[in-house]
Length: 81
Image (cartoon, rainbow, N blue to C red; front, top):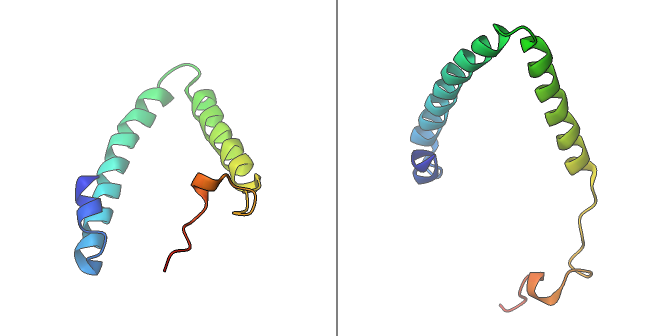
């Protein structure tokens, strides 16, 4: 995570670090998912986790944002130039 933050403005190296991190996380998750699938109700657990994530994502994506006109004073962007 630290390396991704440090290389986010470097186009070439940032992409390489992000792809490496994604590959590493995929390796770690594959072992976890494989272990859970070995359980008696493993497919149900993974399905519920995926479905719950999708529902939460949909609710958060569809919830309205406050406009800056209705935000409290401390949350408004400063207009000083």
